[in-house]
Length: 224
Image 1 (cartoon, helix red, strand yellow):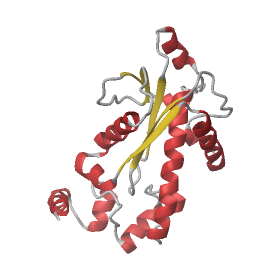
Image 2 (cartoon, rainbow, N blue to C red):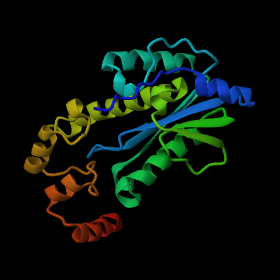
Image 3 (cartoon, rainbow, N blue to C red):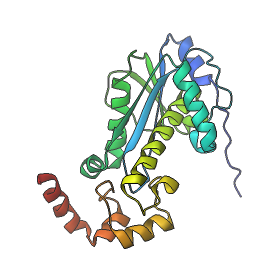
Image 4 (cartoon, helix red, strand yellow):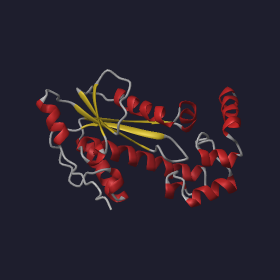
């Protein structure tokens, strides 16, 4: 069996950028591409040099309590940060890939200090004039990107906890909108809400829509 690749989350990308003249370096990341419910959320954050954030790593590798504490610390020490969300209706209209790029673009645009360089998790650049570097698994390698992943994850999780009150019965606070067995069972029993992504296959199936019918349904929904 192949050995799983391991990463060290540190300042290597930021230090390399500084040797090339960059001073304000923004980490950019998103969460929520896979869920059936709710927005995709992105964060951009500019940290000071050697920000004291022990334990910071890819948000997926952290416990909820660890993310909450790091969220507090990041907000306290960051030079600036911004969070942006793109809702389910827009995801359905422009697709999840473009919605992800839009969320990241909007987060960067809302920064109060404009960065010299963006370090972006993954392989998608965004539509802006800033210098950009994409890094696959960047949230496990760059502390700036890891900080953005924590801010985005904590923000989205809090949204889902609030939506649990508005849409009881789906278990949103537990699974955060992902397609778990319990969520799929609730979809079949209760049907989709207006915050469900109707372009995602399990939601289409719950609506009884095929791909062709779904396109017509979306057109009518956006016209009304």
